Length: 200
Image (tube, rainbow, N blue to C red; front, side, top):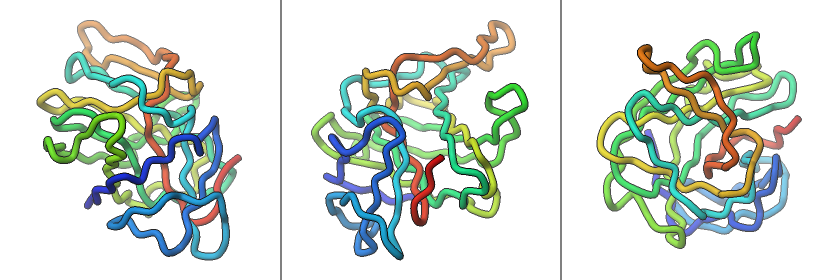
């Protein structure tokens, strides 16, 4: 299940590992500017980079996977939802992994596919988000989660900040020309939503 949110950009409020708490009155189906508050019933968005949509992250082929590493506090609650800003239409495969012993994406915890239509994508000023419900029963108790995006079909793209967020990587899963996990100096505008404040 997903919801589409329009005009709820968080530009200027997100910095490296900064928490943005949303008041309890904010729902996924309605737009409201996030407030820097945390109290009972609040929601917290965790992201990296400065949140400015400056360039589009494209996917050259279906083997390319873009990955964002999210570092959490010990025994963190499971994230509730995944937020991301689509720039172009197409289909994405979205995967959530636990961290491996080698500090990379390990066991697959969750996988889904999202078809993004022309009305879902938007330019840098549109403030359009896709919000995915996550299977919370599988994601709790992790200190690190990896969220991966792959092209399933079409030409999907995600808005990204050109400022290095320090948590973005890519790899190719093509067995004929496998590329290991490589750091990339960009920051896709992707966020995890939690119930309450959850940062290391």
